[in-house]
Length: 271
Image 1: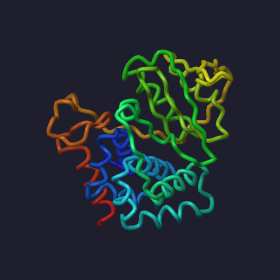
Image 2: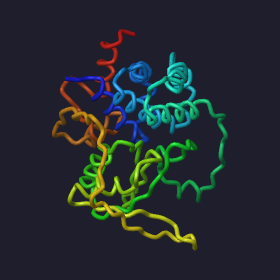
Image 3: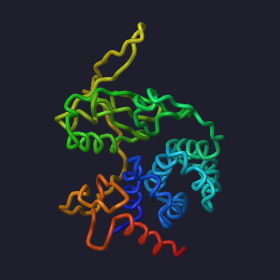
């Protein structure tokens, strides 16, 4: 049974994959649905919606479509000035708004620069109420361990977003400025198979690993973490005719998950 939180959480997970962002924005149901979710009373739904929009705005060709979507900019402006909204939601709404209104400045890239560029999401923000922390995670050897780490971080209140560099066993996490880094280490250590150290630069500009004391650190958890939709046995790589490459959402008997989500949004909001 679909509900708003499970739908928007799955869309966020899909949007975290760069190859899916264009398809989601071009879909006739998903973007209008995300705009309507900006007025949702459930703060968890609202936060996941803003995270999704932030991912989608990372693809610069998406920006004109998103900016011109009916109600998008007005809803973001209302969130920015809304009284009683959490710092996380207000900051993220401001960030998405700034991305959609920033002038497009083309940056020439040499082939060498293109080759070295790594995917990074939610990291290049100028907002002052968030900070980025780079962690070296011992035990981050496979997608199973990555999923375990993702689940641990998603439960920590104050985590805005994160991205992994599997080759170097690192995770860059954007968090609220008042969240202790030790809370991240504590949450990761709770998996009992992973541990984290912070990556910092010394006076010589060299990267060093700093141990984090995770013992006795109280981790504030998010109120609700939604269950994912049921998954089928088939591997998504076999579905070569699908436009979206999915990590947590699988094919079901009624068609692709994206079509099902769009159908849910359409039936819910009648546009």
